[in-house]
Length: 423
Image (tube, rainbow, N blue to C red; front, side):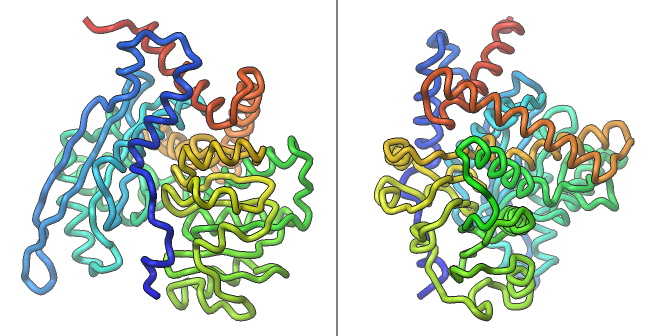
């Protein structure tokens, strides 16, 4: 069976998902019709088709996008994704989710996202650098430290961010480290940035467990997507006493009800390219992994993995979204009926953008923090936002996702009303 066949294909267009989520929350708010439409639609979009010279001398054409969803709260912030399935609608959805993510945790950012339809694993290092520098040049008309600050996402790395920063700096004529975040520490990156998203997921699990009276000692955890987010979250939850019983990547998953050591699994993946085949584990597909009995489920792969079709078969006490949009609106309704709490993506995986904000501030000031300071400030901001979202959900008697969106949309709408409509 191919790696692609092991992953559940998204059943719903991500942009349609994002709009359905927005409309459900916006209906609770007294928004004027024009304001409602303005908050729903992207502010600007750019699609670029660009050539890249390959190692064998041939030329390949690639398509990329950059979308700014909203700029009311400040410059736009959002990652760049390299994946064969990147589409404009996916980038639109991810940009909208970034707007709400920044707003719900109180950052002075709007939302953006970028992507190139490419399998980065199929490129040599030189080809990847050439593609990155050309794409950065193409979208540089939308990018700046004051206007739009990219970061890593699926398929991109600190090295990719370094190439983007260097390309932008060459065009400007001087080094501009604050134009991207998620860079290597050696060129102005922040300590704690690589681990930030996974750390935020762990903090969300910890705070939710307190509120639903779920002891974390020996709590069983299933992680779909053993990439940067999933590996860090698994390791930190393991340190809290949780038992990681199953993990997966694009090639499939592994399962051991007695528990897996996250660090050893990561070493195996780094050596072999996949978690599959880890000694002492049985194999499980990504689809079956989601339905394993567990206390905590972390969907940390791609959008649309939990749907109205498979949601009734989930056997978990808590879901925390490590990925963006892993649960469709139809699945949300099923999980709400079953009273399964879901900590939504715009809150649970906001650790990455919080520390990206710290990195941006450090770059602008050329004043750098210790990892301890970064982690303390991340925890302070995320825990405060978590409890405010929980309170909002209880106040409106809605699901946590709707509560988070109500808080986020209200913050952006209030800022828009205060600023006024130009001219």
